[in-house]
Image (cartoon, rainbow, N blue to C red; front, side, top):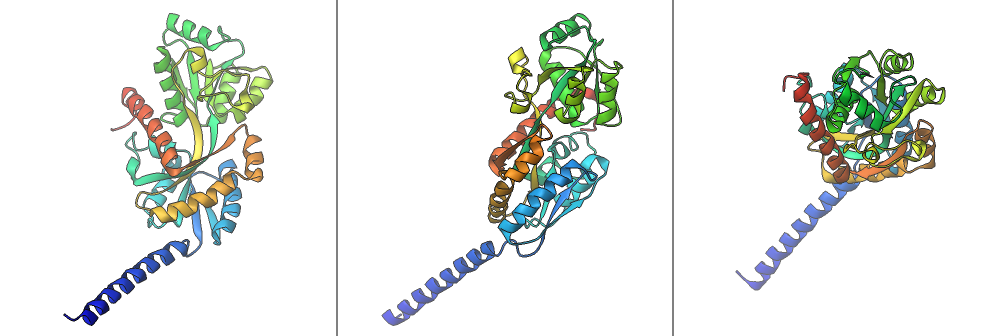
Length: 324
């Protein structure tokens, strides 16, 4: 082969490599190539309002329309399954609580597995707030633990229903504290709070937004929040760890995508969502509900979700709730 031929072959190889690299770069730059859809797996309410607020800002960052669609039902599983089954190209995103991914598969009820969806970004955090009826025979968390140990199974706690994230958080608390509580399921958050405020159950656990008005009115007493640290909105309420119970759990809301979604698409989405989550408009919206914006990128948020899954994996088999 002549020197000229070798030169020609080398030139062709270089041009081909450059073309492939350019094509890959162009593909990355053209994402998103069409309007995106954010699926909210709950009925219309505060969650989809938050999603719409973030979508408006993120759409400007991405240069594409973002449609927010409610696909409620089956405790969030219908919406989660829709996203898990969608094409993994970054154009279909789930916005909701990790419980639709961590709890439902453990109960053996979900048509998708825990690994079928992966974290994209965390948006906000909501500390679980534990409150007692005003006339309960305990006024602090240590007093509750002592009373419950002396009276196994006598203390009752209300939740939005069997197998909900709140129910499992209550069971995880009981195990960490070394006490036995009697669970009373209700059909939703509001009935559980009303029952505790009316003295029909001793404890209620959930997001501070709907519980705090009953605390302010004197019908409930806040005992502890479940986060690692006190939040600004609940600065006077101690954490479980401060009171000697080695557990930290808090509700959060975030974005999830199908497991095979490309990294370049995830990076673009994360950047746009970070701008939305850290905006003044979103901060004002969530802090009004005693929540806090708390962006985390995919890798860090996935660890948070994995840790939650590990806690619930330990609790669920002991409750005979699921088939797994």
